[in-house]
Length: 265
Length: 268
Image 1 (cartoon, rainbow over the protein chains, first blue to last red):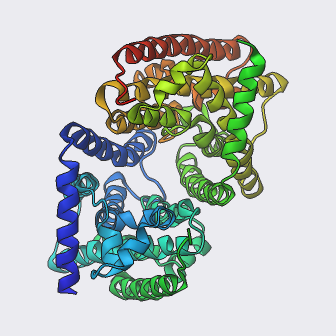
Image 2: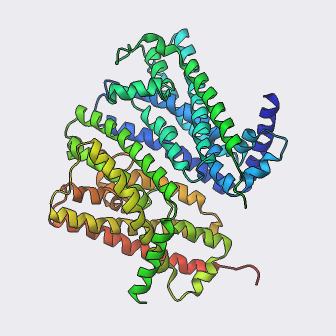
Image 3: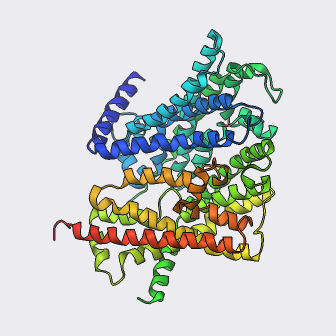
């Protein structure tokens, strides 16, 4: 595990230095990705110019939800986001080259073309978090649950990115379908789940556990009872959800690698 | 230059894009998923404020699905043949394009319209059917609205082409257009009304946004479809798009010419 992290760090550092060869492009891209992720929050601000609450939640509370899921996907994207390009690595035969090298395959795939500019996404979500945090009535257990929310949310998004990208072992062309779950999951949880029908919320709790990225821990931190009448202990089981997602991810990734047969040419 | 030639370019471009079936199906799935998510959010917003921006909830839902349908045809966040143009400038292949008996701008516009037609018939129509099955959407408000919409969409694609082409020509000077492209994508996404319908923007900003070229991507066609623009207002919206097309293609043509002068092809 430590070796893998060291390898990841080494490969990532190479790519960071490479991207710094074009500083103007780097800064434009970083600024662009900061603004681009911020647009979703701009939408929330515009909407709150017209209404006082969405689904019974105020602007400060929605901002907290937004920041929770935003930090989760930002960290996930930062660390494992490159896995989306698996299909093109397969097509170009680069995956075959990686398999011959004495570094774990997943580490090579994730560190490939590692982009430091993705920090912009973390910075953007972090800025909203800092603002939303001023509206929360903090105590020690709320701080602990918030830390858990960000850590588990990041792990869940890491898992989803890798798991869904693994589909490309079977169909190298279908990368975009994964977006419905990763970026879709992010878009979904930017608003209180009270805007969705209760069946959807149950699916997001028990089938694709995206609700644990921010919704359940945030209910605890914001001091709200569950609007759907689901049990209160759900607010503390994000680590379990993260563990389940990561275990499923490991299984899917391994199956994919075993299934993989080179493009053949 | 005969129109037949441009039709031939467009048809071939249409066919070229139609080879990626798995990618198309995956994209339709994703557009539909986002459409559903946004629909529930907008239902909640219009429940809290039933006449926000002069829309009712059915208008807002229709707008949401029109938005998902327009993403790919209009190429709201870049893509399309202008990306190929930029890539060919980077590699130097663009020199071959300058040899052709067709002006590069016309060539790439025809190819982009062919691409847009394919995307409209697949990634435009399919998610709309999903949306219409799941939610209560409005059809075109009248015959004039239907005709106006049918004209507004190709105009929107052409405005988008003009903007994307201007961005791509920066490759002549920067060697890589990814920076300007990202910045343009941010502007386009917000000012086309995909982030949030332009009618919801605060006074002042809204009036400005409705006059900018990006309004032709989604807001103008949608308002025609929904009957928010009627009679002369339909022609006003279409005229605004036409003026932007003239301006943007003019600028793009100047930039292509400037780039052509600057171009140095290595080797041979």
